[in-house]
Image 1 (cartoon, rainbow, N blue to C red):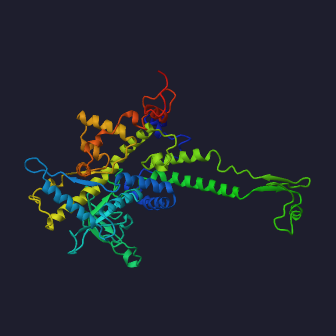
Image 2 (cartoon, rainbow, N blue to C red; image 1 turned 135 degrees about the vertical axis):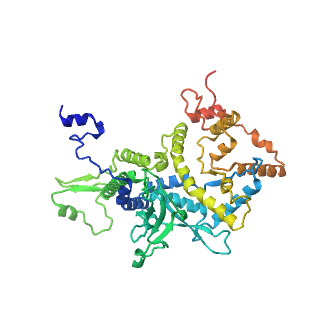
Image 3 (cartoon, rainbow, N blue to C red; image 1 turned 120 degrees about the vertical axis):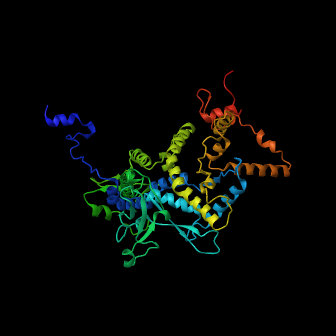
Length: 503
């Protein structure tokens, strides 16, 4: 056996160089080199597709809406020395955060929850999010602490001056031995579209403790992020070209009614000229009789574009885009054709699993640090009194972050299942309510208020619990169907609208 043959036997089959794979030799570089060489082009292409390609914009909106939604809520869970909830501290903390979020944006334009939506959008579109913590000395503010959103494009290594022993790469200053981030260097720290040449020769160094910078880490030592939509860019571009080509072909085809074949085009047109407007050669009701000379023929154009393969091809491309953008085909396109309640439940369940890493990363790197800063500044400013905070601040950071829930596709079935899980001790009411994006205390307050209103109006509160909730009354019921019935017929039959068959 030759040397080459021996080497091949020690390789994975995927690493062998054959006639078909001889030109497939991708560069194997470190992650920062790859990001450094590709990030600008990827950002530009992603942003262009978001502007011009509806499905890309929809994919981003899906991730933003299901990760942050209207708001990621915080419910304080501080306990006193007896292990009971410290209601006084909880009320102070939650009120302080709500007030601080009202004026969190340094520009005064966005609410704190809107800033979080912007952060997630930048994370998906640009591949990374950047917030800088700053202070506004204004006596009318609740606390001086506020946030300024930065473009990731402002990070630069040009003219950057790192501290001794540190290295700057792509605007990020770090310790080469540990990889710890020390500072960030921005070319246009003020933003607002500066174009003066002087702004490109100056950088501002901001210590890392004042910067919120996050991205999806793909490999160890990664300093900057890339859009998670990177794998979908080429597919989306090809799909856009395919749709445009078919649309252009269809538009051109629709402009032609008929094509005349004649050996004398001039004579054909001359015989049809008339000095009388709208004079027809001969007509029968709404039809026209046309007389042709020998050799002349009129062929009516066949408008068959787009062809039968257009819709399946577009769906195939869109499934690839959905897979590449961490969403589902149904949510990406709004196409629920042929989807049953059972299938939809499975689709939503799978999507919920895909969303969990997005939600947790956003909470840990954006929602949690900002709220903890708000608590700290409220204490430092004397707005709230939390005994022992300086000795153990983490005690007052305890709480639950609730991400936006997902609407049920079958409330009756899911509700009954939730009740059984609670009765079996396998799930708490708080967990059920949180899965819908609600705060359990808010729900209890609303129920208490509803009870008072109903009693004041003379309506027994117990009436709410006497509404029939049997499975047979559920229009979405899919089980126990009569043979040959569809789900809708079965529901109507069970409710007595359609007579039962047999027996």
